[in-house]
Length: 251
Image (spheres, rainbow, N blue to C red):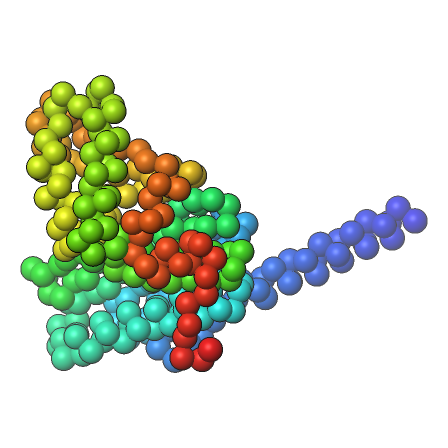
């Protein structure tokens, strides 16, 4: 009886291993392969796309929700296609593209991903482009944008005033703060706010030394409650955060 019990447990364990290996099998696409990577988050898996004929590597989340995943995978495909259009005549194959989505759990059902694209066009030409992915697991919606915050002048002015207040209220930063520097930084719509992190219910704005004040200010981290930032978000991001669905051509 004990032998049968041990054999049964062994067979169950073997079936589990087979099932797990099947779900972790690489997925072959037309232009590359997708691998499942380790994820510390229960809401999504980490995936890696590796191109067949080009030096392209894209790390991105997979939520198992059709609407969300279709938008993320559509963005993945477009990034790859746009890159190929640029480098298809590169005879020396010096070009490369690497994209990473870094996750921040904002509110349990809201995820913000900082997107970093590192593009290399030649040995001497390399640059980074930043963006943001926002996912609402409660509504099943997602959106990708180059801008985290609304680029409208009135909205940027309001964001500046909110940051200005937070800095003036902080005795460690206030004596060394330069409001004009912060205003110029905030109003510059070419800035993608890659200096922003989401820590639960708090949004952190990280600044370099001398960026918004004197050197004595150090490298300030300005914190604002997430609820106070929602009104300044780029409109489609704000809509997703508030639970709205963004219409697509298929809707």
